[in-house]
Image 1 (tube, helix red, strand yellow):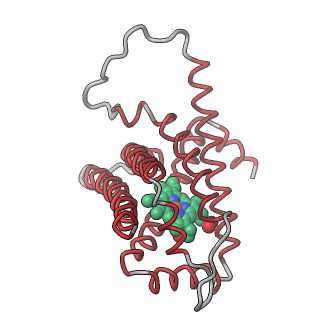
Image 2 (spheres, rainbow, N blue to C red):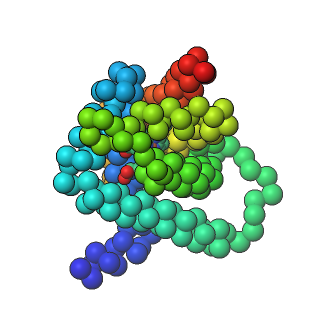
Length: 225
Ligand code: HEM
C-alpha cells in the first residue's frame, strides 16, 4: 500500500494515474455515444434504452459513483500537475516554437488544460440538464428522455454550445488517447503507430458522432416547429 501511495504521488505515477483515469473516461464515452445513437431510432427505442439503463440496472448507482470518482481524480491530478509544471518553469518562453518531429507536441497537446477545463464546464451544464432536471414520465416506464433531449437541443445557443464542446472533446481525445497509451507504456515498433492512429480515428468518430446527434436533434426540432 505504501508503495502504491508513493508511486502514484511520483511524477511517473501521476502520469500513469492520469492515463488510467483518462482511458476509463474514453471507454465511458464509447458506451455513451453507442447509447445516444439510438436517438435516431425514435422515442420508443431511445426511451426503452433509458428505461433499461436507469430502472432495470441495479449497478447504476455504483457506476455513477465510480464515474464521478474517476472524473475527480483525473481533473485533480491534471490540474495539480499543470500548476506544478508552471511553478517549476523559471520564466515564460519569450517565443513559442513548434517542437518538430519526433515530438508529439501539437495544438491539441498544448491546449489540454484549456480543453479539459472547458469540458468540466460543459459537463456541469450537461449533467444538470440530463441528470438533475425535472423529467417527463414515459408511459411504458421510466422517463421520456427523447423529449428531454429534443427540448434541450432545440435552442440554437445550446445546440451551438454542444457542437463547439464536441470539437473540444475531439481535440482533447486526439492528444489524450495517445498520451494515455504512452504513459501506460504501450511501446511496440509495429503496433504502437497503428494503435495511435486508431486513437485519432476514435477521437474524430466520437466527436463527429456527437456533433451529428446535436445537429440532427436541432434540425429535427426546427422542422417540427
Ligand atoms: C451531443 C452530445 C451528447 C449528448 C446528446 C448526450 C446525451 C446524454 C443523455 C441523454 C444523458 C442521460 C442518459 C444517459 O446517461 O445516456 C447524458 C448523461 C451524461 N453524459 Fe452525455 N451526451 C453528450 C455528450 C457527452 C460528453 C462529451 C460527455 C463527457 C465528456 C458526456 C457525459 C455525460 C455524463 C457524465 C452523464 C451523466 C451520466 C449519469 O447519469 O450518471 N456526455 N448525456
